[in-house]
Length: 417
Image 1 (tube, one colour):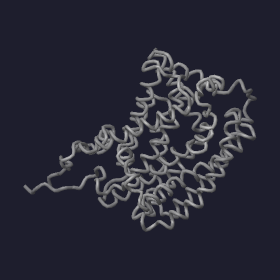
Image 2 (spheres, rainbow, N blue to C red):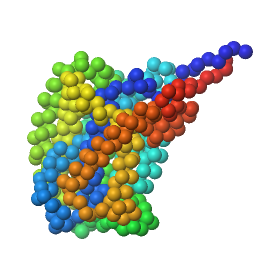
Image 3 (tube, rainbow, N blue to C red):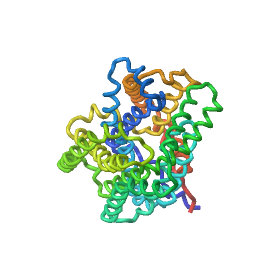
Image 4 (tube, rainbow, N blue to C red):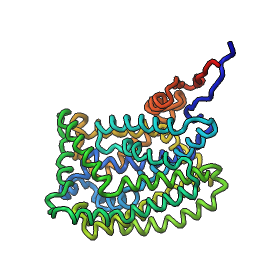
């Protein structure tokens, strides 16, 4: 009998293969996402202006809302989507080196992510994991595409996102006339108020209704297309290998930043007050202008964030920005734990702080919680190779034992000849 032969099965990317800058950038994205979610968890987003004003203890929440709209709204999920696309390209390259079945592996990976996302959505309607999983299947179609082809498809999807508000507005106008009383946002806001109660049954079913409304909103406002566009842009960056040896691309990073930053700054400076003054439904002419501008200004700002962050990383800021990397390495666990923290703090089944904090206080709280998460993640990764949910995801994806504790060598499968 011949000795066992190592078949080099697919497995998680080793520590040495990871790009620390991508992990740190992912951590940065998590911070922005959490800041944008706190007003939803606390109920501030769904309160009447008078109620919001009553919570404005320092008289700055109005300015803070505009600043958050300018700096945060849409930018960080776009940044996270860009990183997802780069991750797709990295896994594609890794599978090619091992001569592994990429389609089977990636499809299974997305399926497990979908399951995790659906479970998470049962807790919070704002889950993005299930959407990433479903939209991510489109990337498989481009696994053998040349960078030029990916670039053309990316340009087409960005163009589609830019004209999508016109498509939606035309479609709605061709349907039976709708008055402002038919605005689904009113029902959305009413359902969110259920979270202030201490009735788990009511909270659960209100959340499920909100999941359905959120899915419709993803189509209505074009967010699904925005995610796909950033996925594709990330895949293009990965296929071109621009995420490697970033010190060799400082000129390119600087050029991208100085092109995208002015577009993002000017566009969002116009977009923030326009968004504050424009109802989401029905789609008026101003709504079309706002959402078309969003399709240009938001990804431009997200790309400026990414290029600026990486430029700083390669220019001597690595030790400071590196504190974000552990959180980025266990992004799935951090993201889900933020939901649990939000529910525990604000919902009636937790501490019941729903509707009791202003926007500025919520922002400070989000930054403080995330700082604590970074510390916990750093300590955790001294002892463990993955975050707990990341380990479950990998174990279910690869179907072989994977070492969880550091110091335990990863187990490889073998077969007898």
